[in-house]
Every structure is written in structure tokens, then in C-alpha cells.
Length: 99
Image 1 (cartoon, one colour):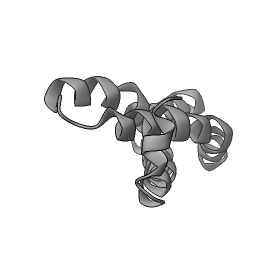
Image 2: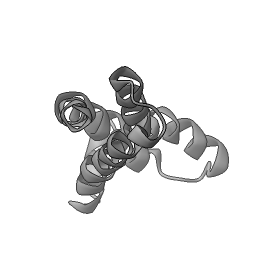
Image 3: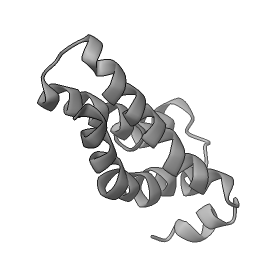
């Protein structure tokens, strides 16, 4: 929460990116996963994993690969924007696309 002030100082682009890009990833995989499996549960899990990679892997990867990176930007993007948007908006979209 302390890093949100720094995050909002970057403007609207990080907010939009943190909302739109994971949704696009999840929707693309929800549609394309039909080429791999026909089971709706597996397709849903594939879509969730594709959309959630940004808040599962990014904080750890950024700390290791770019230790000088500003954690005030990537942590709030992953945990304060992408995660709640994915839970509230993304999951129902992916499920409806699979149906």
C-alpha cells in the first residue's frame, strides 16, 4: 500500500496496461486452448494461468533480473491492479469464452 503513491505518479498507462494486457492474454488462451484440450476445466485453468503470470512471476523475476527496477511500479501493477481485475472481471470472461 505504501507504494501506491509512487505508482499513481506514473500516470494512466501502467494502470491501463495492468488491466488490459492480462485480460487479453487470458482471453487468447481461453480461445486457443481448445486446440490442446476439449475439457472446459483444463481450458479455464490454462486461461487463468496465462492471465495471472503477471502477478505470480513478475515480482520475483524483476527482483532477480533487474534489482535496480523501481518496485513502486511493478508491485502495485501486479498486486493492486491486475490481481483484483483478473478475479472480478477476467475469470467470468474466460469462463464465458470457453462455454
